[in-house]
Image (cartoon, rainbow, N blue to C red; front, side):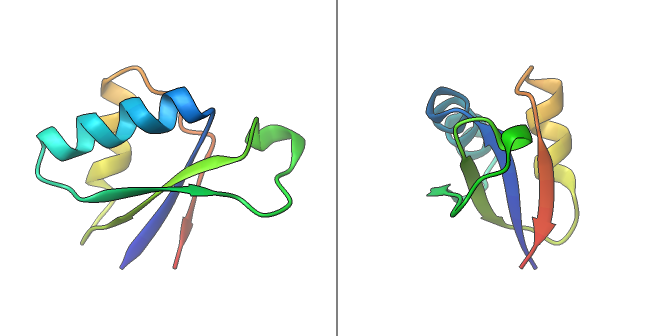
Length: 71
C-alpha cells in the first residue's frame, strides 16, 4: 500500500525523505492539493510500505507527522 504522510513544510519533507532513505524506503515529496490549515504548507511524503513503519521512523526522528492517508 502507498502511504501519504503529511509533514507540513518542505524542510520536514526533505529531512523525512533522507531519514526514510537511510532505512531503505523510497519516498517521494508531494505537494498536497488544497491543503487544510492543519496541513501547514502542504507537503507530504508518498512511500510504499507494508505497514505504518515509515510513520514510526519519522516520529522517532523528530519529524512532526500531521496526518496519514492510504492510497
